[in-house]
Image (cartoon, rainbow, N blue to C red; front, top):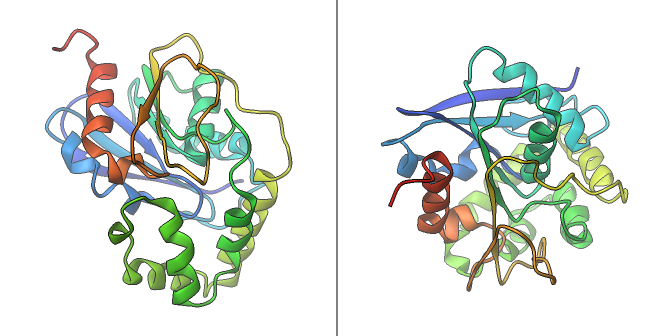
Length: 244
C-alpha cells in the first residue's frame, strides 16, 4: 500500500491539514504553522517519497497519495480544513472530491493540475540532484526573494537522496506528473480559495479568470514562505467566514 505519515504540529482549535508539494515535507510549513497555532490544531501529512513516509509511491499519482492520507487521518481528524501546496494541492482536490475526508474547505497554494503541468525541467532535475551547488540553483527558482533558500537547505535535500529508494520514488512521481493525466477536479461545493504568486515559474498561474483566485504580487511558487500573512488570512476566512 502507498505510504504516508501524519504529524501533529501543534495548536488548539479546529483541524487544519497541510499537504506539501513535490520534493518537500512537513518542514516546508515552518513559517506558516506557528501562525495558525492560536486558532487551529495543525497537522501535516507527508506522502510517499517524502519526509518520514516510506518510499512506496504506488503509481505516483495524487489519487494514490489521497488514499494513503485518508487511511492515516481516519479517526484522528474531524472535518479538517485542507491546505495543499503544488502537488499537495492536487492531492487536496482529490481528497475533497471523493468525500471520504469530510473537509470543511480548501486553501490551495499554486495547485498542480488546474493549469498546465509543472515546469518539466524542474521536475526532471529534482530527483537527479547530486551536489549542493546544483540543488541550490534549482531550489532558488521557487522564490522571488532568493535569500529564503539557503545552501544548508540545498545540501540537506541532496543528503536525503543518498537513499536510492527515495530517489527512485521521486522519479516515479516525476513521471506521473508529466504523464498528461487528466487534470485534478475543480474544487467541489465547499468553501475554497486559490492563492498564486504572480512570479511563479514552476506552476504558472491561470491566464483566464478563475473562481476564488487571489494573485500575490512578487511571490514565487512558495506562498507559504513568501506571503505567510496572506495565507494565514485565507485560512482564517475559511475556518470562520463571518470573522472580520
